[in-house]
Length: 235
Image (cartoon, rainbow, N blue to C red):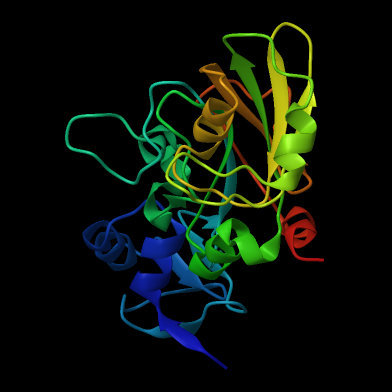
């Protein structure tokens, strides 16, 4: 049975710092299986021990998965000295999980973005080998050519000679195009549309795999994904 130090367990699963945890244990505010903990460095079963702080049960979470409705003007990064990042927008209850974005959206691109502390999951989601679809709505600066879907299906060759995988393109109303990719090259959609003579005025990601952006999720807000939803990425 794998065990972990009590203070480490609490630092990962609560908002408390190590120094605060020590004070709470000393004050008798932390219990393990109904008994007040005497020391902060005792070992517990992370998955099976019942831990409370100030009479509140602490749930064990190794990994966290969040959907964010990314607003424009925010960096898809963990930290930046001068600009706000998506991690800065995460609620206090998740700050201690050392979250990072799964892949990147350009600063001015909006829509669904995943954040997690599960490196293996993140790698699988963004790997072209996983063939996980990412669906975008692009607002372009001219009328899309009628052969756009066929050209995207055949695989666009970028200006620098990079060959893109076959992608789906659907021409919508009001100079909008839905594009579905299974890879994520640098500025890929803007570069692909540039090849066919279109500039991108706005870009919004609406779906990753089977997970769509919740309609009631406001820009900058997050909602947690759970096991049933996570499993849809890798059936």
